[in-house]
Length: 204
Image (cartoon, rainbow, N blue to C red; front, side, top):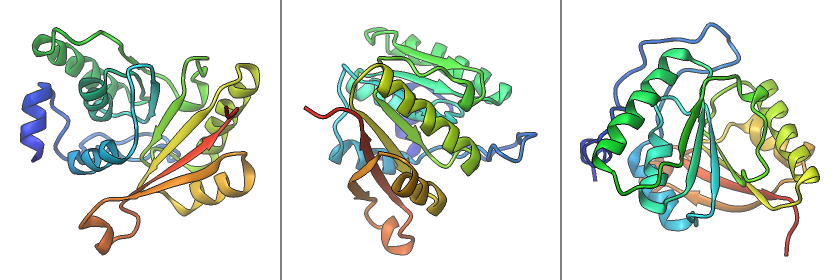
């Protein structure tokens, strides 16, 4: 399925080149995860209606709407850029105009990722290289502190993972790599076209 198919299905606008840049060098440019990659992830990784998923650096919200539409998961998008935050809010209005049967469990917050207070219900966290290693380390620390206060198992999902993110999780956290999902065709040309799934917390 191409991008136009999904944009029409979800009634959102998340394609196109970035024309807005962030003032801080710690926050990177907007680039949505391709629908083809999201198809691959959803075929090999389990999302459920009981999940509460946080997308750090959500941009216009593509990941959020896709996961909510197909799995009914609760999703939160964290976006520090005011322009993209407003775009996500507009997409939410459009999404529910044609998806009236969907539960309204999509939320967007206009704040810095490291200042987001991890909710006890949050159990999955998505990153498509949205910010610098310094910010990533702070966010991971916040997640792990939350699991100590509210015992649960949590997953971190990295797409097109940076070597710095991988090194940090492997050497400076209690997260363990549990799966690698390669995106067909794209992975052969660039091995970074994959999803890495890390897990931490309390296992049953």
